[in-house]
Length: 465
Image 1 (cartoon, rainbow, N blue to C red):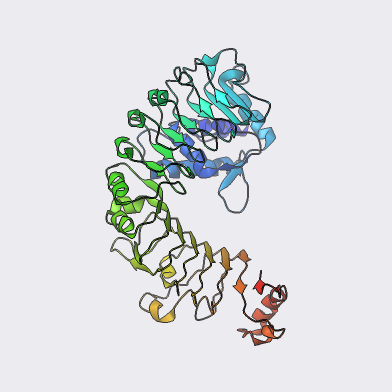
Image 2: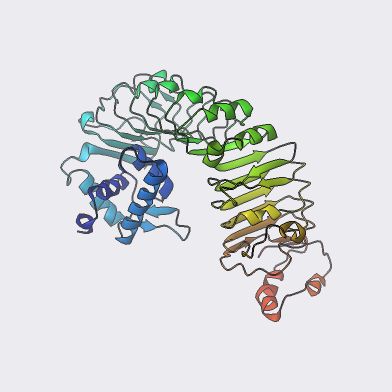
């Protein structure tokens, strides 16, 4: 059996963990690795970067041996074939001898309460996902439980205070995409908790007693549309990952100062609406390098971005008067990991030459930039050009509602990796002869793109290539 030939006991443990999820479901690699890290399956006392690299190496081995499959070309998701899943479930339950070692109920709207389990003490991992459960009550004796996944239970509105009382060893708790508005104070008794996901919930404040979770490494509060403050977050001393994107909590200067006191922080996702908060954020190199996903929204003044090692995803939205100024440091001359940039509704933006500092950009989305004439300005770019090719890794390009855009670059670019162009141009020409006025670089380019131009919708004037 291929399972027996896996390279180590650690790889086998990670494979068995995958059996917790329904067969054929898409598993995001980074989420899977976060679970493994917080279950201590990737080794104790590793840095997050080291553990993440180990996690990807394990996933690659499982894909290489066909125990997992990549879902698509993006490389972000894997899945398990139902035949392999059956084998994994068998192995994960001690060759079928201890079926209550893992409890899995997914996509069962008829399930309205905890499932019947003969001996809760035997349960090691449990997933109750997309069920009809509205309230979790009682006090099941789950002394061996280490992972509890309750995500996507849209009807779940409450958890009783005694529910967590006999779960001392939980390391991973996922309550995302539920309708919870508050959590019981007894949550703070989960002294082994290392991973807590509250994303896409209705919570309005941080859970009471959060500071008692001394082992907490990973806290996800993204898309918490009612959460207005994370005051007190600095009291969670070992926190490595803090995700705040798309929450109601817009980061101000005081929040940045509090984040600065989290000495172990390695990953932040965050929304900022104040240029002073942004300046404060980039004042501390360690903190700035921890920012992986950043959204600048409704900033009232021009702002500067410092090139960092960490930034992966940048969104700029509804900043009326805007010029992005990039400051390079001696340690980092580019946004080396920046792969996704989305900019919308910035009325005064005229160019984006700073994208030269993002050599690994794969996704660029621009929308509603009424004064954008060119993406790269030759004069501004000249001091930065060092012979490197530009936008060579771009895979997705979306240009929408850009009424005066004239050019992307001052000369032709090959775009060798481009896979998708959506709503590429908004064209002002209302007559039937507009296509004759296009200047093609050569006959081959004309032959390649002219047929796409014929898809023009005259009433809108938009070419969707």
